[in-house]
Image 1 (cartoon, rainbow, N blue to C red):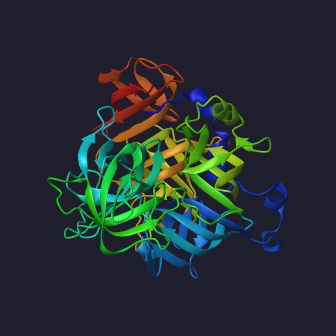
Image 2 (cartoon, helix red, strand yellow):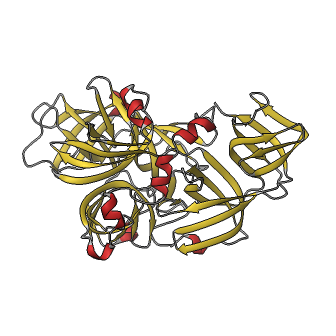
Image 3 (cartoon, one colour):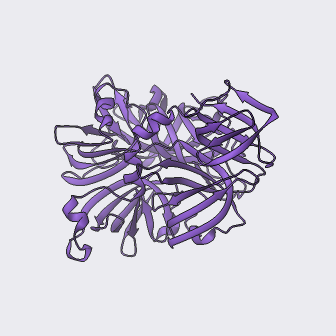
Length: 490
């Protein structure tokens, strides 16, 4: 459930406008200059892939025609080795328009690979599933986590099960890995991967790998295994690849065929580079440090906050868990923050597509209607929008959507009043849903944003009858224009 009221939504909306309009980096002079006369800016970008046609990351379309690829430590040949939701690192440059750039290299490495255990549906939200791999807690979100499989076309949020061997890419929110991409491995694949800190190394062939949540694996290095040339030592952050010889009796005993030094913060040797990242703000009270994607942040008097209230939220520690975009310079393993923007999704729609107006494949508007309910909603689609039906080999964008489609959209409001789509998913289930602020209500009808549903004798009010400005989720399960459930959000 969403935790922002309409009043808070308005107060935090500036960041959404900036995110919806592309990258906010660069000065006003640069944004007003002739792009042809302004040189591209070298930049390292970390974020999840939102689409293809080259590669879209953090709202920028990167030309990858001359890029090199490193995917799970193996050389690859093109975009078909990638997928939507993978968190990648792109080294290259961004043009003056802030919307396009050129990638020199694209690298991807999953966060963990292993057997799904303790799978459960969140009792408070059936659109969330949790599970563990080697004791690491993982959260998958329907409509936000992209599911893929090597040999199972039916693998999805609904079909994932205990015992599946999967690789996961995402970002840690505290000790929980929030998955943006989950790939089910081939049925015969018994190779696993985990990252953590070396402890209790015996100087020869055994050590304990401490993962997130303080979960641990007992690692035995197999004869002939690939290991770091400088050797292994306690305190090193490494990735271990190998198998579990006895998964029944010793599920935490891994036989390693490869031990590789890893960069805990995803950036590695990009010292003194301009960096842009997106992810969840996390505060570590032990080190008194903020981070995003495991990258430590440093704020100073020159840092710009969007909205300005975000500065106070960081100061009083209430910003923990917020989704942000950060730009700055990476020096001595710390990102010196120039700009930080809040990006918060609070609106949700399951609706019919009434009209599509595209100025580019990933730029335009979709007009949504809700069957017999009165009123429509116009949603802006930008390069930041994640098309979750996308794959590395199939183009899916505004040109793929017709007026006969039904879609699910997570969105946010910009300070210009426009609504910007964060994720877009083709849907074929009966019924309509809308989540947003109540703008009018009486005994027979309720208006959410600009859409009016009928209140019937069977309408169920969860958490009480809402008032104007309350944030609610409405379900019209049979698509007759009458609200079946109206729930006030926290």
